Image (cartoon, rainbow, N blue to C red; front, side, top):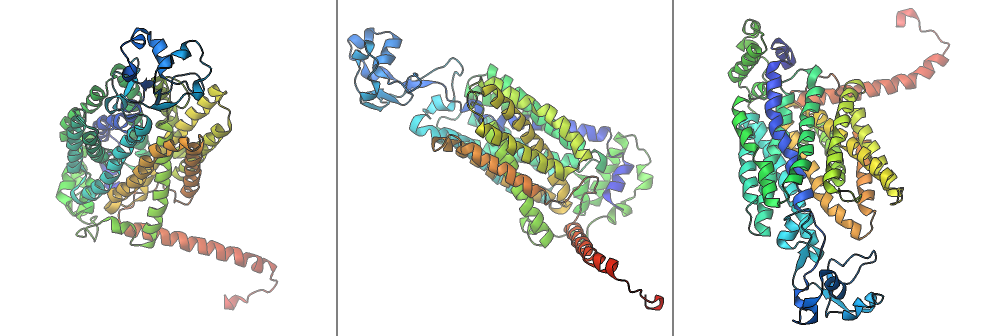
Length: 556
């Protein structure tokens, strides 16, 4: 008897499963509010040098603000004041003649900067002057956060497969709210960077546990639906972030606003069950029976106890239930090595593409709140479409197709002229929707590919690869100083290459979840045997057709 058979006896998609999904969607709404928070807390408003050092107590003090900018700040090519340079001395002659700007000596800002506060009351850039030669530190805050997410994926992957999904989820909730709230009260950049690292570390558990726990409790037919619902919670949070950031334009209060709902998530944790599939895989039969019986009662399946006894569940436990699995098991056997290599590449490409687009919301000259909202809203139809594609064309085609199409959209924008901003924006929004569709697919696809005994390790490893790609995305965007199109070329390459790699993964549509590593190796052996047999049949077919000699019946 397989676990899917037992789950059918409890109604594999009833009110019990809907309750789990609802409880796990609450914290998933918070994830994009932190993962994409840098779009707002690290925004760089218009700024110019503070000209207080030029005041001589005479004529300069009597000038209007516009005149002060004229005599104190050089003008860039497009006519706006320079953000990082100023004149060493007031150039009063420019009040009469502005044609000789380029001939005048300039210096770096002496007394800091003056920021435009019409859109943001305070950001990281204005708090610690992370502009001009320090702007890389501003971008690095996103990288630091995602490095925390990256290492959290490794640690939480180990802990979840060893101690269970439920208990480690509470650890994740607690870490995220404690360090998230603390970061809002940072009094130095170093303190903020450390706390954001720890916040990302804690949030990883929510990201990788919630989707696995949801899918392990539902039957085969509804796995795609669960994956899309969980992903839709992300989209809801993403849309909400645009509205919250618009209303709360101080970076400290914004962090508090998007972190506070985790307190409600901690309360709802008490109603979240442990994964019965994980319990059985680790020999905890009585506990698994308790949750399965609870599921059956909740789903109005009163005859569960008479059909499924403890003895039946005991026979389902794996032979290696006393073995402790680790990340080494992901590369110990040929089938697992191949699976780990391919999924790692795909996750890196998916994440670097999605965040490379999402973190560049100022690239089209539109209001950043509007751009973020449009980028988030396009995810809704993208996920609805991908749900039907997952069940009709399969996981593999969806994964490779969405990545390849995303790469094509980015490539089109590379060649479109800047003047066609309306067309560029349309193509960019389409690419953003496709990149989100690929992210929705990869979570479900990877969960179905890895066996139960190392599933959380597998998700932890692939999340590590994803966050490696994400942490590099802000740094890739800095390459526009080298060549304006360089970031787009790199992201386009990642999307197309990972899309081609996804074609090499096995299909999991309507397949039962693998329980042990042996299931992966047996599947690989059957695939290799089938391919060899087909090759042999093809090589023998022409020979048999061309032969006129009949084999005597007695020799057959």
